[in-house]
Image (tube, rainbow, N blue to C red; front, side, top):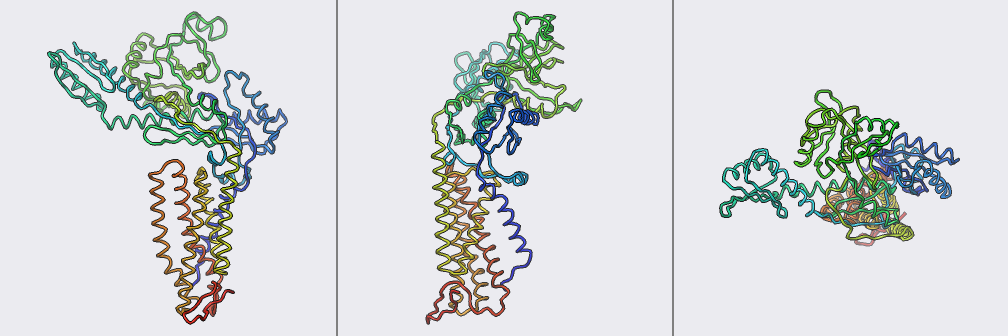
Amino acid sequence: MNRYPVWKYAIIVVVLLVGLVYALPNFFGEAPAVQVSSAKSTVKVDAGTQARVAEALKVAGLVPDLLTLDATSVRARFASTDDQLKARDALQHALVPDPSDPPYTVALNLVSRSPSWLTALHAFPMYLGLDLRGGVDFLLQVDMKGAIDKRAESFASDLRTGLRDKSVRGSAVSRNGQTIEMRFRDAAGLDAAKRLLQDQFPDLTAVESQEGTDFKLVASIKPEAVRRLQDAALKQNITTLHNRINELGVAEPVIQQQGLDRIVVQLPGVQDTAKAKDILGRTATLEMRLVDESAEGRAAEMGTGPVPFGSEKFLDRQGRPVIVKKQVLVTGENLTDAQPGFDSQTQQPKVDLTMDAKGGRIMRDVSRENFRKRMAMLIFEKGKGEVLTAPSINGELGNRFQISGSMSVVEANDLALLLRAGSLAAPMEIIQERTIGPSLGADNIKKGFDSVMYGFAAIMVFMCLYYALFGVFSSIALAVNLLLLVAILSMLQATLTLPGIAAMALAIGVAIDSNVLINERIREELRGGASPQAAIHAGYERAWGTILDSNVTTLIAGVALLAFGSGPIRGFAVVHCIGIVTSMFSAVFFSRGLVNFWYGSKKKLKTVSIGTVWKPDTTAVADAK
C-alpha cells in the first residue's frame, strides 16, 4: 500500500543529485578577477586573445586560478586582490599600447569560485542584481517620433525617385511631419502616383483631394507599419547597447524593453556613472569611400611614398594600410539593412546590403564611373576610423547589392552585424539614473539570506514539535524544495534581486502548507479509526486534490504577475512560479517517498509519530514517538 517502486526512488535520487550539482556554485562565493573585452566593434575576443592574456600573465609572474573564454571576454581569476591589481596593470601594458585608442578594455571584476569540474558541467551561480551587488541603473527614453520622421523622410525620397523614373512631370513631393504630400498638375500624374504606391509602397496609405487646379495625394504610414518600425528600432537599439556595454567589463548586464518606447539598462558592479553614460551615448558612423588607386596612392599604401593630397590613410582589420579618398559617397544613414547569406553561383559567403533611394542613386552613378575599382567601407568610433572591407566594384550597383570575396561565414555574419547595428536606429535620452553602492548590496544580501534562513529554521522547529517524525519529514522536504528552487534559478541563469529573495521566503511558507494539509489529513483518518498504513495512504491521496487546487490558483496569480508586471514584479513572479512547481514535487512526491521508505516495510504498524491525535473520546490512536 505504502511502497514506492524502484524507479520512483531512482527519480528522486537523480533529481536530488542534479539539484545539488547546480545549486553548489552559489555557495562558493566570488573571487577577484580581471576581464578583457573588446573596446571596438571591429576587434574580436577569441582563442588568440586568450593566448595573449596567458602569455602576458606569465611574463608578469602571475598564475591565475582559472582562465576562461566566453563569447565576449577572457577572464582570469586570482586568489587575492593584490594579484588582481597586478594582473590588470600587466594586461593593460601588454594589450593596450596606445591608451588613446584602446583595442581592448581591461576591467576588474568578480567571478565565481566554483571548481572547474562544476564549470565543465555548465553549473554556474545565479547572477546578482543591482540591489544585491551594487551598480548603476539607467532608464532610456527612445525618440520614436524621430525614428518615424526619419522613415517618412526616407519614403519621401524614394517617392521622388520613383516618380522621376516614371517620368511623371509637374509633381512635387514634400514631407509634412509624418505624412508625405504629393501635388500634381493633372489626373494622369495622380494615377501614376497611386499605382506606384500600390506596387512599391505597401506600408503607405494615401488620401487624394483637389486644391484648385492641382491634384493632391497625402500618404501616411499605416499603423501596423509604425508598430513594426518601433519594434525594429527598439531591437536594434538594444543590440547596439549590448555591443557597447561589453567595454565596461560587465559580465551580466540587464538590457530589456520597458513599455513601448523605453529601455532599462542595469549594470551590476559598475560604479563609474560618467563612463557608463559616455559609452551608452556613443555613436558609430559608417562611411563608404573610393580607394585611391593612383600611382601615388599605391605607393603610399606600400609605404614608399606620402599620402596624396585629397586622400587619407586607414588600417583594415588585419592592420594593413588602405589609402582612401576623403570624399564620402554614402553614410550609414543611407543603409537600411545588411544580411549575411551565400552566393547562389559560387556558394561563397556574402553580405546583402539594402540602401535607401538616395544611397541607391549615388551607388548607381559611382559604380558606372568606377567599374573594377575598389570601394572601402569605414566605421568611425570615438573619432577613429577603421576599414571594414574594401571590395572591388564588379557591376552596376543600386538600392540592393552584395559584398562577396574571400570571407568566411563568421566574417560575413560579423560584417553584417557591424553594418547593421553600428549606430542607434532612434535617438535616446537618459530620463532616470541611480547608483547603488557595493556595501549596500552586501548588506541587502546578508539581510535577505538571514530572513530566509530564520524563517526556514522557525518552520522546522514548529513542524518537528507539532508533528514529531512527520514534521522531520516535512522539514527535509522543505529543504529539498529550497535546493531545487536555487538549482533551477541557477540553470536558467536568472538574476536574483531583493524581490526574488522575498519570493523565496514566501515559497517556503507556501511549500510547508502542503505538508500541513497532508499531516492533518492523516490525523483525521487516525481519529476516524483507520489503521496507520491506511491513514497514511488516505492522507496523501485525499489531500492531493486540495493541494493541486490551491497551488494552481496561486500559480495563476504568479503567471499574471509575470505576464503583466515589469522589473522587480517580474523577478518576484519568476521565483514565485518556480517555487510553486518545486513545492508540489517536494511536498507530495518526495515527502511520501520518505514516509514510504520509513513505514512502508512495516506490515504490523501499530502507531505513527505524527504528534498527539485526539479521538472524540480523547483516546490517542497515535503517540508522538
